[in-house]
Length: 67
Image (cartoon, rainbow, N blue to C red; front, side):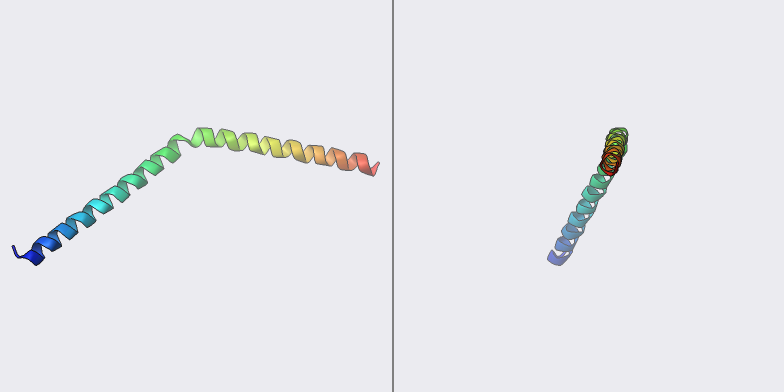
C-alpha cells in the first residue's frame, strides 16, 4: 500500500467511526425520550391543570369587577 492509500483508509475508518457514534447518540436520545414520556406527560398534565385554574380565577375576578 502506498502512503496515500493508507491515509485514505485511515480517513475512511475515522469517518465510519464518526458515523457510528452519531447513530449511537441518536438511538440513545430516542430511547431516553421514549423512557421519559410518562414523566413528561404527567408534568404537562399538571401544567395544563394549573392553566385551567388560572383561567377560572381570571374569569371569576372579571365577573366580580363587572358586577
